[in-house]
Each structure stands twice: as structure tokens, then as C-alpha cells.
Length: 224
Image (cartoon, rainbow, N blue to C red; front, side, top):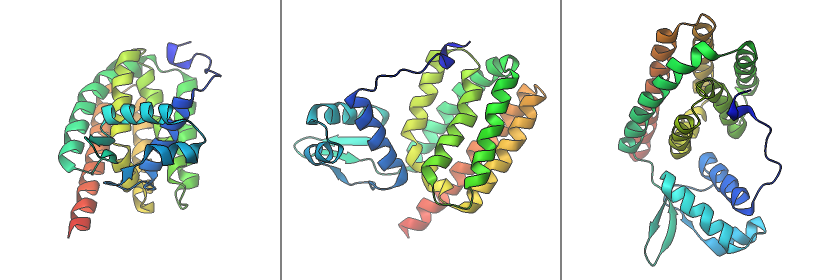
């Protein structure tokens, strides 16, 4: 069993609760870009003390999802195409390496998990549950990355995914985009089953490029 598939931890800290909740709110658009994050208010809503909320905000700041302004506090980061392009370029370098190492090591159980994620997204394609689509999307991709059995590499990729979650949520909010995402997933899985490493790398690059192009169009349209 790979290290990433060991038994799940049963203890969840208050900081992890705060972090998970804030990530979900930012990714789903409940907390808007530029919105101020008031620690005391968030702590009250979560039924926590301010300390775990503050630590969660520091983690989100390190990931680039929030920014800190001296004497003013924390704010949800504004969406910026330059940030997305840079993050996706770094993702390309890391994910290509994960694919090269991981595809030959994938087992039948992994491919079943990837197919189940595809089925979940198909089922959710016409709805509005963006968080569940995001969760299935992550399972699909990180099953592939985790197969490389390089936890530090996978962790760097995960940080970049966390940082760009609001952009991805903006993209898959559209039902047409969700269908396109899953069509691309099906092609990727077919290449995985054929152990076609070069094909998987090519398809993943096209997958990322399509997201960036669509997000750029959405942001440009919002700025008009």
C-alpha cells in the first residue's frame, strides 16, 4: 500500500476544521475576491476560538488564497490571470514528472477509482453542487499523481491546486465546461489504461490549457 493510501487520521484539529471551511467558502464563491475576512466573526460562525481561525488564515495566505494588509487584516485574494498562468506552468513541470513515474505503477484499483470519479462528475454535471464536482475532480487527478509515490512532489502539486481552486470553481460553474472536463478525463483515462505516458502528458497539458483559456475569457468578460 502506498503511503498516500494509509489509513485516514481520525482526529481533526480545530485549525483543520477552520481551514477546510474557509477553503470551501472561497472556492464556492461564498467569500468573494477582495472581501475582508474578520477573524472574530468567522470564529463565531464556526464555533471556534480565534486562534485556529488565525492559523488557518496564515496557511491560506501562504497558499496565495488570502492576502494580509497591515492594520487592516485579511482579505480574499483577487483573481489574477498572471498568477494562474504562473501556477499552471509550475503545475505542468511537477505533474509531468508525477505522470512519468506514476502511470507505470498504477494498479487496477486506481483505475477503478478514476472511473468512479468520472461517473460522479457525469452524475453531477447538470446540477449546481460545485464542491462535489471539485472533490471528484481531485480524486481523478490525485489518484494519478499519488501513484508516483513521491509524497513531497504530490504535496507541492496540492499546494498549487489549493491556490488555484477559485479559478477552477469559476470554470466548472458552467455545465458545458463540466461536460468538457469529463470528456477530457475519459480520454486521459484511456491513455492511462494503455500505459501511454506521452499521451497522458499531452492530454493533461491540453486539459490545463483549456481551463486557462476559459478562465481568461470569463475574467475579461467580468472586467468589461
